[in-house]
Length: 216
Length: 216
Image (cartoon, rainbow over all chains, first blue to last red; front, top):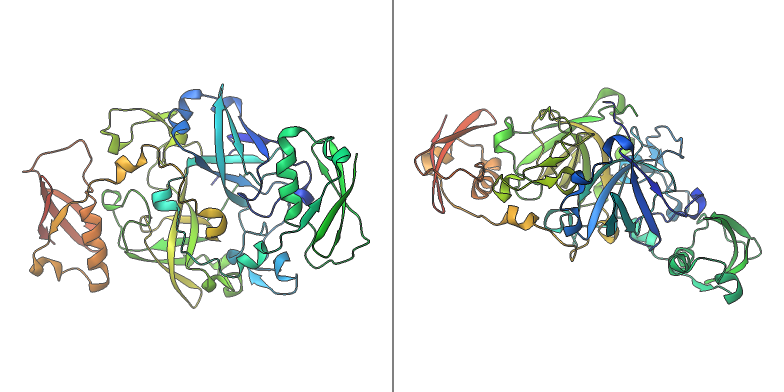
């Protein structure tokens, strides 16, 4: 089946490194901008009645290809799991699935938060989140909660923090607190740098403390 | 982007008419059978640790094409909503999304229940359901709960019921209780018939009472 992008996402995630592993974990704002062909405000009529929406999107940067098994980073990178038991990009069809918070709709552009999609990611479908069928609070997380355990204390010097636009500050701190390092690295001296919007953010992690050392 | 089916679903939903409007509402068993190319049990390793999985599938029978607005049947068929505010098949890319209950995995075949997919539906992706990100119990249902209100009392004469295989009985009754009629019809004399597995099930609805009148 041939599918085509209906929209693209615009935000400050310009590099794969900084992207949270799942949506719903940070609050950075994104905009969903439709391609001309599907830029019809009628197609969004009634969407504002929902608080959350599903996005089906493409792992466009991953360039991954199919691998039957993968090593989930949060399991330490040494345990192999079947790709269909993970949200990894190494799938036969590189489709991603994320629920995001719908903030508002302005002239056919959907403003969302909590998205884990990199800037420029193509979107193939948008659906309302329906809690009466989609929310299963007592479903099992399998081993995935191991992926969600580590919360770091973040030290972000104020003079560096105000180089980040105000609307992004809280989200960036939350993102950092979830430890964006590859899990199997543990070198307190090592400095990690990633691109965040127009800035380069550098940090170091010692035990449970993440310290931002530079913003350029 | 070109995507290809990784698996097909097999169950007793042989006709569109009988399909529940959303997954999670009935308990009919289905089997997910992989195509040769992706029939690799390694790709499912660890999936059994999850209780629920996502399916991304194709509205293959709908043959719908894109329509910016649609008339949700449960709103009476007279109110237009944007297609992205619904789960309707009339989308630019005819992708369906359903969470289903994982029962067990046997020799590379996934047994699920609660699926709303018609027999033979192509599946493009399978992902674990992760409640820590996917479950948002306090999200708004918008007007969608109007779609979920009517529960009918089902009268299913025993001699007809035992023509249905035992594993399917409870699911079929639940399906009938959700009123599979087009919502804007209300004729107590009219007999509705749909194909269920190898059987044809006929029923009538008078007020809140659905009576099965024949199973062939």
